[in-house]
Each structure stands twice: as structure tokens, then as C-alpha cells.
Length: 386
Image (cartoon, rainbow, N blue to C red; front, side):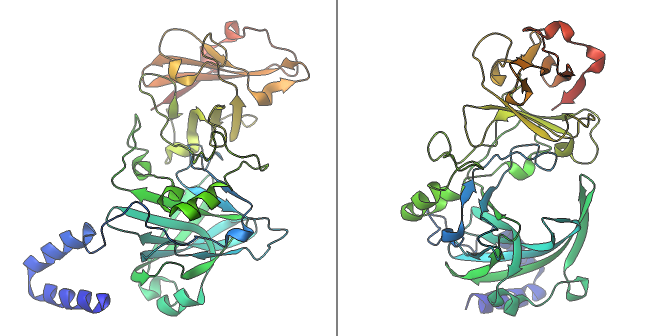
């Protein structure tokens, strides 16, 4: 009945330009969708028996995800479940877009996959990413992909890899629990959720527009489903997240301090590829993290470094207390420990409220002094901005 009503309205639009203006406003503001309640999700999004762990928001995997990631991951053990796991509509949803994405270079031996975008209610929308194949149910409704079928086609590049997407715009009402496809051939799949009633903030809003309404998907499930999924929130080794049930965080920016996300002053195309995150772990919120994208130093680039933050001094200082105060702060990260000494260090100096310099020092296996700040060299540092 919903589809028939929409067809009637569209027919009226052809006759009246005024009706067109009204319908465009109505549709673009999603007024046709139901109002939102606190827990619209009443069905598991995956076959949970095959899920080994769920990764909280804010995961770091530079350069593609140098900034805290705005989606969760559901992972399986491909040795046990090589065929992955089924995925389902988490609630009554309306699918508005399905994309087929082709990779120029295979990722985990996968050359193409799909994403499914959907509306939940007037204020909440979501997306499933890295879906390996669609269900027979969906294939029967949408047909094939390609420009010849009226799909939008576009390409983009991340870290030298080219991605091509075919986008099919839809308006498919799907009930909770309906099987939508299969995922996990490469290990896992992505789950985004956005809520326009929630607005996060960063110092530089240009790079972060797509992140601003991010929420934890688990919070939108009924309690019985939520608690079962929270039990699977662990790190890669299976250690439960800290604090308990921590669903992660992505908005770390604190103005006039080092804490948050940055990018090289001469970044090209995509700020995140050349980014720097001075944040905290999505698995253990007490652990400091330095995530480095393409900094121009092959031995340091595209890595995540961790440390135990300190509340005073200049060593491993909490990021929100590092400011433009003329001091150099240094980070002896866990990954820099060799034998009984640190042989590498990262030095940071803020030079104004929206610029900082970062210097890598590698002593080639020789122990560094307890205070490495005299080794600071402006000409060897990298300028980051936000």
C-alpha cells in the first residue's frame, strides 16, 4: 500500500510544480518515515553464533582509518566459518541505496562486495558495509548492477587503491529479521548508525561532516539483544573491552590542546590518509594511542602506537593537557621498548592552537636518554594542522 500511495503522489507532482516543491521538502526530510523510539532494533543484525568478536567504534587502521572509525565491525573465524555469516534487517527498515563496490586490488582475496543503506525512522539511518553477496530476496527485487540499469557510477582512491561503485537508489520496506545477504568472507562486516538528534564536534568540521551524527548501533537494540552483543565486545585477542561494555568513541578533539585528529599541512585529496590521531584506544579507554597515516617516513608510517598516559610531566602526558606552552612532550610507546630500554620516541610540540609539530627519533637500537627533548630538531619535524 505504501508504494501505491507514493505513485499517486508522484503522478500529482507532474501536474503541479507547487506539489513538487512540497513533496521534495517532505521526502528529503523523511517525514514519510515513522517517528523514532529508543530501541527500534528487535532482531540480531547477524548470525551471532558465528561471531567471535564485535569491535567498538573508534578502531584505528591507518592510512585508510587513521582517524577513529565511525562504524563497528562484526568478525568471524574464517577457518571455522569460511562461508561467513548471514546478515539481517535489525528492525523494520526502508532500504534506500544498495551499492556494488569493485576493488582494483583484492582485499583478503575479495574483488567486489556490496553495501546496504537504510532508513530506520525519521532521525536514524544506517549502513551495512562489506556485504559479500545479497540474499535471493534482494536479488529478486533489484535486478543487476551497471550504468545500463540506471545506476550511478563513480570511483575514488585510497592509498593508491581504486574503488568503483555502482549505486542503485531504492525505496524498499523490509521487515525486521529479513535476511539481506551474507558477509564475513574476509573476516567481518561493517555497521554504521547515524542519529540526527546526536551531533558530535571537532575543531575542523570540514573533514568530519560524515562523522557528526555517529552513534553506537548496539544502543538501539532491545535490552535482551544488546546485552548478548555487548558480551562479544573484545579486542583482537578476545580480552573484554575496558570499561565493561565500552562501545567506543570517535570525537576526541579538545580545542587548544593536542588531543584529537590532525593532518599534514600539505595533505593531498583526503585528510585522513595523511592524518594523525592523538586519542585513546577503542578497546581500552585508559590507553593512549598515536595513529599515524602517510607521514612521509616509510619506517613509521601507517602504524598505531600505544602508551600509558601520565597526569603530569612531559613524558606520555595526557593529550588534553598538551598545549601551546612552549614545551616539548615525548612519548615512549609500548612498541618502542627494546630489551630494557627505549630506542625510539615521538616528540610533539604545539606551535599554536591549531598547529603542532611531530618528530620521530630512532636511535638504531641504542638506548635513548631518559629525557630526549634536547634531541628536538625543528627541521626534522612534521607540521600538522587542524
